[in-house]
Length: 114
Image (cartoon, rainbow, N blue to C red; front, side):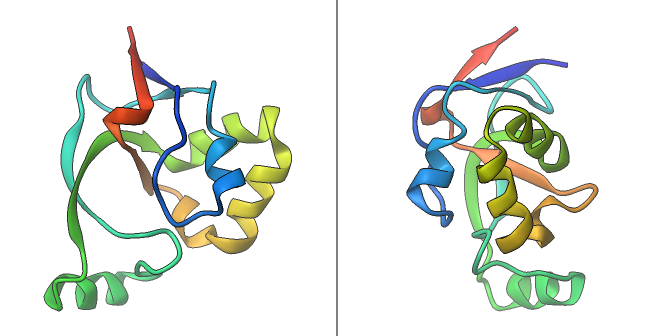
C-alpha cells in the first residue's frame, strides 16, 4: 500500500492542535493520487446512514479532493505518537473512525510516498 506524509496542517473542523498532530505522520492511502469525493465535516457531518442520505438529498455533502486514508488505521498511527490527539477523535468524532470509514487529506498538506 502506498502512503502520504502529512507535511502541513490539514484543513477541517477538528481543533487546530488536533489537526497539527497529523504533521510528520506517514499514512497509508487507497490509490496513488488524490480523488474527488463527496464529503462532510467530522463534527457537522452525518453520523449514521440515514443522516448520510438526508445530507445527500439536501445537498449538504460537498465535493472535496484529497488522498483517501482508512480512518481506523490513521487513528492507530496517531495513537502511537500522539495519544492525546487520538483520544480527541475517539471522544468527539467516534462516528468518523468506525470500521470502513475514510479520512480525506487535502493534497496541499501531503507529500506522496511510494
